Each structure stands twice: as structure tokens, then as C-alpha cells.
Amino acid sequence: MRVRYSTRWATRSLACIKRSGSWKSSIDSEAVATTEQRAVDLEVEIDRLKVDLGESERQLGELQEETDDLHHQLDDLQIN
Image (tube, rainbow, N blue to C red; front, top):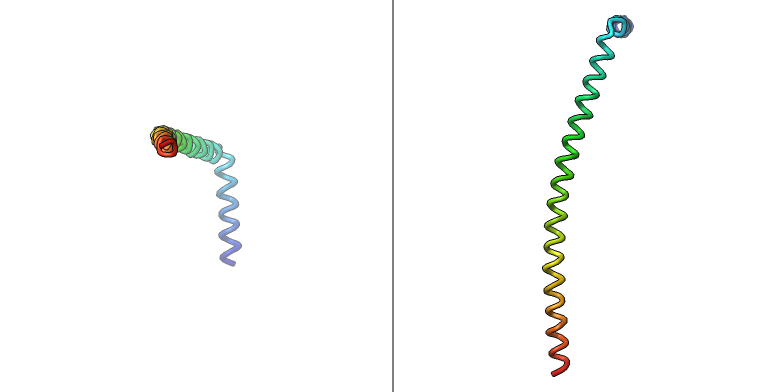
């Protein structure tokens, strides 16, 4: 049967690769490369978020100053 043959062939191939040791080193190096790329991607994302946070804090400061000015103007209007 074709399915049985394919499964048997895959099992034998995997056993040969495992015996040779190249299977483990291939997976290990691939896992390391994937993990390293993910770390780089996360560092880039962190840097972007830091820039966004800095911009948000700057805008918050401007809005707080504007709000304070408006409160002072309102106080002045209520006094007069």
C-alpha cells in the first residue's frame, strides 16, 4: 500500500538522519537562528515603542500646560 510505504520510508529516513547526528544539529541551529531573529525583532519593537512613549509623554506635557492655562483663564473670568 502506498501510504504504508511512504510512512515506512519516512521512518527509515528519519532513523538514518538521527543516527548520523545531522538531524539534531540541523534542528538546533535552526532553532537558534529562529530565536535570535525573534530577539532582534523584539528589540526593534521595543525601540519603536520607546520612541512612541517619548512622543506621548511630550504631548501629555503640552496638554497639561494648555489645561493649566485654561484653568487660570477660567479662574480669571470667574473673578471678574
